[in-house]
Image (cartoon, rainbow, N blue to C red; front, top):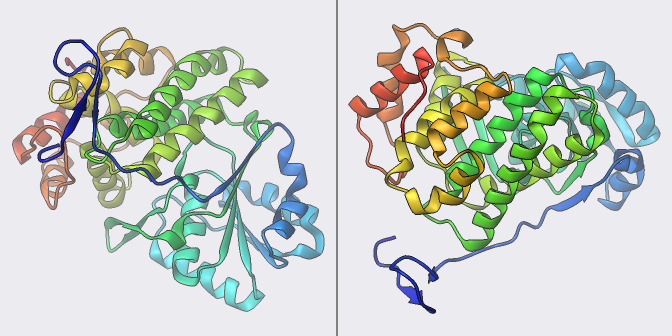
Length: 370
């Protein structure tokens, strides 16, 4: 970073053994991790100082949410099972009406990024306590970032109220996660780690967590594809999700997230699948500008970060092209226009033409070159 002093110690070529100036703030969230730990949810809610929990879920997970509410007994004030992708403001407003009507003093978000996003949107507006029980590998449950959609645009906001107070990671709850969803959800989390490695405000702790999170997924995902019920692999993947999500919460994101927010918010492409498809292409785009920072990650995937991630994604059955998730080629020009507006900081300078070319490659599903 320009203007930042480097402290050099030890021998080696330029760039080796250098420690630059950095700042680091640990997350205040309480993390509970372990097989079967979700069975202790009654005491977890009580320890959070709450007694009127509204359980949140997607329509698909309504039955699971109702079972969880039943286990909470008198601590539950009901279920709102209306969470959807990209956190539309109108859904949040409907949930807020239920919050007010029920007198809830906390939300328990059961599910993936859609449900977590709704819980965050509620807390941002009310400062209610959030307890999140993830069932996917999204990782957003450990960030103070909220992405929400209104009038066809997805915007993000960062605020301390958005960070969930308690996250309950129970690998047992992920055993039934379909393989396809496991793959795309994990690649979504991996995107947080890859971008965290070259973030403008990266630090040694976030970089260590990023590489360890990528390692956990590189090890566990091929096993999950072969043996979806493998308990050890499921635990390893959920551990990776926590690490990668924590990176997302600790440092700023760059081009990859800007493009994915554009595609999801303005074209309603599926969230995890969009991240999965774009990751090899955005990583390759930034490879030359962040070669040193990305080297530990590239080593996990055959030595090339973009091509290696593409090969890994293909080997585990991930979607490979934007045309496969409903985008049409005529959308690419408008997507490039939007993604070029108010760009996030990025290690490699960006312009509309380069983004348009990158989107074309991702649309066709071509293997990128670093």
